[in-house]
Image 1 (tube, one colour):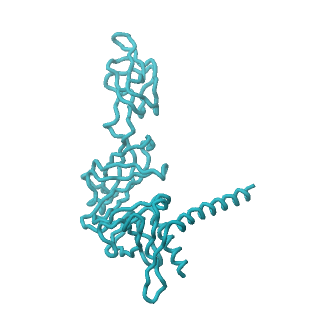
Image 2 (cartoon, rainbow, N blue to C red):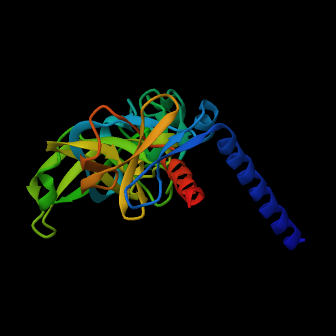
Image 3 (cartoon, rainbow, N blue to C red):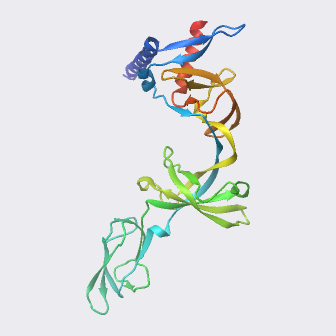
Length: 314
C-alpha cells in the first residue's frame, strides 16, 4: 500500500510539472543573443499574462536608498503598565466569593469577586474596568481587603513590551521609533511588529549592553509574558545605493543576474555587480539603472527558463 501511494504521488507530480511546462512552451518564447566565440546566449524571456499569473510574478522599481541593516538582539516579553490595571475595592470588607483566577479572560464590567462590606454589611460586586487577562490574583475567600491593596491585576495583552539588550557597538544605529521585527521559537513562521519606545541612558557594567524597549503588536495574544524572543532592529545608513531585495538576484554560473521587465510580457536578463549585501537587500553598482522594473517573485522560474533555453541551443 505504501509503495502504491508513493508511486501515485510521483506520477501526479510529474503530471503537474508537464502541464506547467506545456503552458510555457506553447505560449512563451525565449530569445538569444550572439556572443563572439561562444554559442548563442539566452538573455530574454517572453511570458504571456496567463503564465505571469501562474507563477505569481511580481516586480519592484530599482531605486537609490540607504541600505537596510538588521541588528539582531535577544530579550524577554513583559506587560505594558499602560494596558493593565490593579483592581481594588472602594470599601473595606471580607471576600465572600471569587469568580476569577490567574489566566481567566475577562471583559469590561465582569464581576471578579464579591465582598461583604464592614460598614453597611452589604454585598459589593468588584468589577474589571477593562477587557483582558488576569495576571495577578491576590483574592482568597475570607481575606480582609481595603481600598489600598490590589485584589487582582488585569492586563490587555494585545500590546506588550519586549525588553532587549543592545551591544555598545550597535547602539549608534538605534533610534526611538525604529521598527522591530520580533520572533519566538514557539511560532517560527510568524513575525510580530513593533517599534522602539525607550533607550536606557545607562550601560550595564557587567554585560556592556544597553537596555531598550519595544512596544509589540501581540497578534492573537500568542506571545506570553516572560517568553524569550529575538528581535531584528531595522536601521539604514546615510549613504544611498541602488538597492534591490536579495531574492531578485539569481546566480547563473559565475554571474549574478536580475530580470528586467521592459514591456508587459518581455523580461531581459542583466548581469549585475553587487558591492554590498545584507540579509534582505543588495546594493548594485553596475548593470542596472534607476527606475527599471526588476522581477522579485518569479525570478527563479525565469532563470529556469533561461537555462532550459541554453540547453536547447546546445
